[in-house]
Image 1: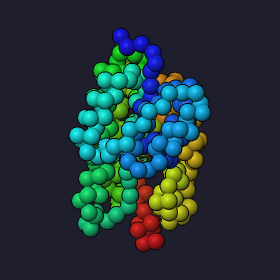
Image 2 (image 1 turned 90 degrees about the vertical axis):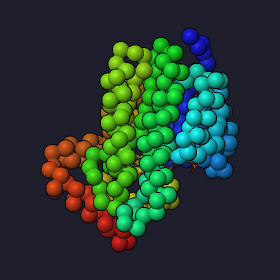
Image 3 (image 1 turned 60 degrees about the vertical axis):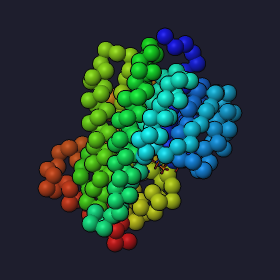
Image 4 (image 1 turned 180 degrees about the vertical axis):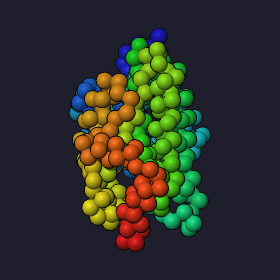
Length: 263
Ligand SMILES: NC(=O)c1ccc[n+]([C@@H]2O[C@H](COP(=O)([O-])OP(=O)(O)OC[C@H]3O[C@@H](n4cnc5c(N)ncnc54)[C@H](OP(=O)(O)O)[C@@H]3O)[C@@H](O)[C@H]2O)c1
């Protein structure tokens, strides 16, 4: 049995929702292991987080390469007791499928699907050494419907949803609790902001700041909630999406994205 101190590992912690999750956990005096791509300001974030009197380590690596996921997991399992795993790093985008570069499609699939599943698998023995441990996988409201011009992104987030809920069931009775988070639009970076703006009114339904989403996500993660849908507008959207037949829903949600492509 590994003893204290325990850590929260957050992927994609250099900006956006991952950074907000790191601050939210630091406020709760949780030690942190931060992961993001090299050269994107992770050391500066790590040093800001030290102000909260927590232990912080950072790892700069590209998680879209499976050998990096394995190397990271090995380092973590050798040196740290992990109580919280937050699989947040994710890529999206809007492109016509017929002209999309293979690198773009592969990047989404490798990061959103493969890295999430592999990292969880490799860290699970570590998490299971804690009396109670938590996994938060970041999906998206996009998981609730296929969306034209985004194709692999919503499909990857539907994977995250199904994977998380299946694993939660499989781990029932162990100390590991798995939750899945479905954020709506957040202006986390220049690209996401531009995409939200181009979609007009529809793009702003359920809009929240990453800080708002992170605060709710951490609170409900600790309560052991299975599905975390932040905000009233997103809850309503989710219900409507569940009620509408696909032949009506898919063209409807795709219309705003078509506008984004034209814009
Ligand atoms: N923004 C939205 O509107 C929205 C809506 C629903 C769901 N989400 C989901 O929420 C999560 C966070 O999104 P966000 O908007 O906060 O993203 P973001 O601002 O683009 O940040 C993504 C984070 O992931 C890291 N990252 C990207 N590629 C990586 C890779 N190959 N290896 C390691 N780290 C990598 C980035 O590191 P660097 O800074 O080093 O590049 C960054 O820290 C994602 O899973 C996303 O799909 C976002």
